[in-house]
Amino acid sequence: MSENYIVSARKYRPQTFDTVVGQGHITTTLKNAIKNQHLAHAYLFCGPRGVGKTTCARILAKTINCEHPTADMEACGVCDPCMGFKNNNSFNVFELDAASNNSVDDIRELTNQVRFAPQQGKYKVYIIDEVHMLSAQAFNAFLKTLEEPPPYAIFILATTEKHKILPTILSRCQIFDFKRITTHDIVEHLQSIAGKEAIIADEAALHIIAQKSEGCMRDALSMLDRIASFTNGKMTYSNTMEHLNLLDADFYFRVTDALLSQDVAGTLLLLDTALEKGFEGDVIISGLAEHFRNLLLCKDIRMAKLLDVPNDHKPIFFEKANQIPPSFIISSLSVINDSELEYKNATNKRLHVEMCLIRLCYVLQATKSGNLLTTDDVKKNSDNIATIQPAVVERQAIATNNINSTPQINNNIKHNEPVATTIVPVQLVNIPAAVPSGRRLSLNMLTDLDTIVNQTNTIKVAEKKEFTPEIGIEIFEKYKQKLHNEGKTMLYSQFCQMRIEVLPPDEVRLITTNELTETYAKDQRSSLIDFYNDETQMQVRITTVIIEDKNELESKVTVLSKTEIFAEMIKKNPQILRLKDTLNLQIEY
Image 1 (cartoon, rainbow, N blue to C red):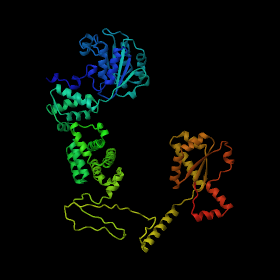
Image 2 (cartoon, rainbow, N blue to C red):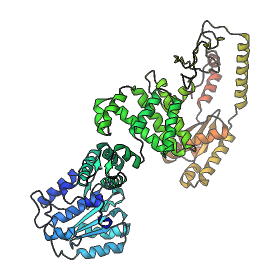
Image 3 (tube, rainbow, N blue to C red):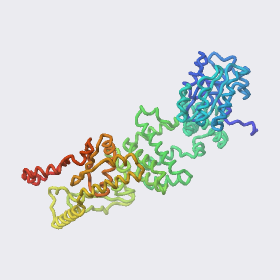
Image 4 (tube, rainbow, N blue to C red):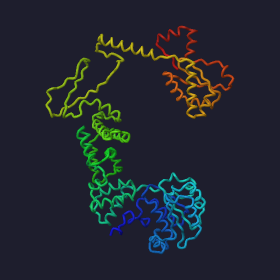
């Protein structure tokens, strides 16, 4: 009996347009083209794997050669061309796998066959699967035949990677884009097949298969066969999840309850249970993200149609979503998303997942104000948490305005009794900008403040450096040499045409001879500023000036900088300096 077994993907492959699942926009167009005799000489079927591209190509080839098509343009299935196609001995349909026949010689052999008229039927149909695998030379050899084939020749090209096909090929074809099959359509098709195969299958189990297939009918049918054998024809939600190595919704609901109760120990124990069953950390994080997304969709009735879960699970999701504030869900999604992105770079995968769950335990407490938080916000708030388990360690912090007061611990608290915990975030301030009213400064505080200020001034004086023209020119030459070493010949040649002026205390002026050179200078301004800052440990400004006459580069009078302008103003009116010092003004650059 084993040699007669045929997998469902082959046994239930559609034989007519009406049996194609989820591609009504394609099948209707093809049937109308056959009915109105508006067949193109070349078609391109593109889309994801397992959505019916090759199947529709075969149905089209059989239908256009059928001697007695039905009123709605379906093949009769009993005439000689239809029987020949069914028995795989048709002389009018040729299938070529471009993945293994992608050379120029293969295409030349095909074009030689096109010259001969069909022995039976109206058309010779050439189906080229995975056409994007053809080499560039093979595509070029195929162009002329594809553009002007004989009237009896029709080419149907199928591919999963449309972007790899030459534009000259695309312009010669009618393009049909196949879409992924929806979960609802896959579930309905699996239910019909399960009925024919005497398989008892829960709708929730078929829904999980449809989700796992990601819109690919072939994958869904393969999973159906595999799970039916595993369960001996009795498919339930639990054994389907077990065979597909997925965590069921009940696990994520228990994790959510633990997070809402801020039960870190319980959450980590649930994680340990999942890891012991062989589930990987990234699978757990991804499933948790999908779970919280479903909870978010249940917060608004308008988004309920986007909820892709079994029907018997929907009431549970709506009930749980009504118990959770939206700020908690959105902030949790942000934390989960960041953890999922960083998972592949983590050295200790288990610790990474545990840290993600620990942060999620503090999200509810951190979002009590209703504000949305990022992962960094949750980290900061978790650092300020006074307790991990309020039921185990009870503390009460008392804040007063007295700077010398300390938190008092209530020793009268009974063990194992819930206690309301007040959390006081601690802010560290290095130097206060102003002294609040009602608070006295001690002599020690003033002494410490003077010491800090003196140390800061000493550091500033030590770090202050003089920026001279010689240093500026030397650094500019280093930058040009750097461009030369990196192989940036064009930039190097343009910078060799420039001259610089160093205008103390912190300005470097690039003098160019034309707008093109100035454009290169402006494009490199950020890089040049970073280079100067690294070399001098100072904040240097870069400006550009155009002097069209090269002879004027040396003779033109130097334009004064703002610092030099201010110095000239002081010479004419010394009172300006006194005004500047009195009002503590700074020169605006």
